[in-house]
Amino acid sequence: MELREYTALSAVEMAELVRRRTVSPVELVQAALDAIEATDAKVNAYGAVFADDALARAHALETEARAGKFRGVFHGVPIGIKDLFLTKGLKTQRGSRMYADSIPTETAPAVERMLAAGAVMVGKTTTPELGWKAASNSPLYGVTRNPWDVTKTAGGSSSGSAVAVADGSVPLTLGSDGGGSMRVPAAFCGIFSLKATLGRVPTYPLSPSEHLSHAGPMTCSVADYALALDVLQGPDERDPQSLPDAGLSYHRTLGDLPKGLRCVLAPTLFGHAIAPGVASVIAGAFAEIKAHLPVEIVGTTIDWPDPIDIFDALWVARGALYSTLKKEDKDRLDPGFARMIDRAPAIRLEDHLRTLQARAAFNRRVAESFRDFDLLLMPMAPIEPFAAEADGPPDMDQSKPVPWARWTPFSYPFNLTGQPAAAIPCGWTPSGLPVGLQVIGRRFEDDTVLQFCAAWEKHFRWRKTKPPVFAGS
Image 1 (cartoon, rainbow, N blue to C red):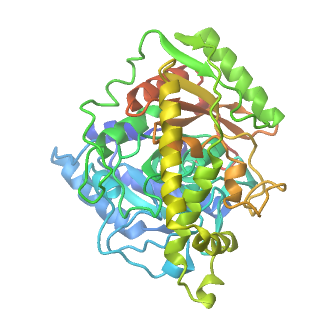
Image 2: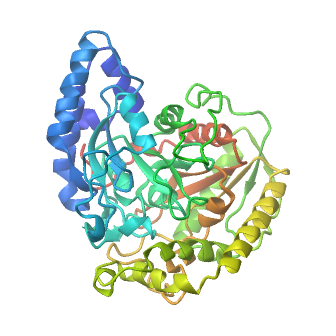
């Protein structure tokens, strides 16, 4: 299979071709490996590639397909897995030299479910150390680069997962999001992702900030995401926050956009300044939504207080788990992560409990606001991607408890609330970098967010524009 043919296909289309026996799993996996070979030296999306294992699995799946047996809806489709997800018998290095030789004895629920549905894991994708920040570099893997401009960051912490989809090496990856970690790289790399309602996709092992951390797909189309969410949803005994199955197929209901959907268009939040290139793209997207999508625009003012202090306290508290590290081990860490560890002991138990109360109060205020509308539409990030080697733009204040949260102020509020929030491409700045539109819905109403995103994707055909680093070029 030629790369141009392979990269034109979504995961849904690949699976359908396998089911028709038009394309074999071996062809798809070999094309994925060829695509990685063509792109990864430029962008560094993969921490490990499992060529032999992937091809062996593809041959087994091909034999099954010839016999008319299919394991699930992704039979033979190549995917990437963020290297924070446990994979039994294969290294899970977490972007950290501390875990460089760590081989798990079990597999994370999301990975198990994708494999059970017939997907083929071709590699583990890069992440900053322990997923602690929203940039795309780590002590273990080095720098992961944006395929639209390799001098720029891909965002994080699901850095490699976003790049692997954007550069065409795979149509679908798994990522995780504790403060924007799927949505920020999706926006910076020009792909789609949704942080579904907290617990919709079970996570294990539990994050030190389990009340913030979500898992889910990152994809080249909304339909791919919806089909993957069908596979991933439902409880798992290892995750006490995991939700029951929603009782619907997100994929089959994509076209059911509710009538009279009430949308708020917010060009910013908390009064944050927006880079001119980003603001212009968002304004253009808002104009298109008003003109072409069958929704009602509501003039509600969003006047929530910025919950940055709540997020700071919860995010820094996770550093307490590493406070007993020896100095020589701490010296090997990402310097920013080490600083976070040093801050953690100052958080007292009573402070932490008050922070949880403050989070509950903020969540209530947000939920009450959503009585007046169904979706909040706004920029995903107020800035364009910065230098690939950096943790943030040049003016980022390293003295803050969570410095990176200052340049991505529109993501963490919705980790606190646990409600669904998607990032979908809506245009490109004059410098040619993607801009993401964030679509936020009520808690548990993941289907409404996906239905709106599918309608926007049908109108704004963002997949036609490819980055300079693309396997099918």
